[in-house]
Length: 204
Image (cartoon, rainbow, N blue to C red; front, top):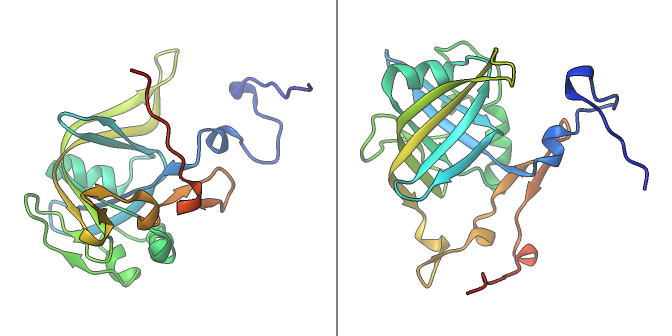
């Protein structure tokens, strides 16, 4: 079969970079933070995932040293909020490039609610939230050792909040939650639905 091959350093030769479409769809890191002075920030990151069970560690990468990274470096705390289909438009509003003193909570019509263990508020409208304390902030580098302008932020989840409607016999119902995920096209997202579920047990 015909294969399109390329070296990223030389360009992909396509209308849109396929890299983040191939590594996807990806969960969204909808990260709340605040500055040392207390200004609230809420921003979505498409390079996001979980990396460890015990302790639970999640992380996201910021392409560019943005307000979120600056805030987390200053305070050592952040909150991840689940982006769902019903919150998709509000989440998209928080992408807006606004000055640090402008809160994306207000911009998107979202409600900050006090967290349990960290000073950063979570999004009241989101059905799931992780309160996190920062464990590492790493500037990424290429294979040649040169630093690139992207920062990986890792945090330990110290408190979890789940809307009980999403707990079915004590098991979290991912499909019912309505997770949305980032695709690779300029405006592509995916929506998890019950019909997409299949189960497969690990071999013993």
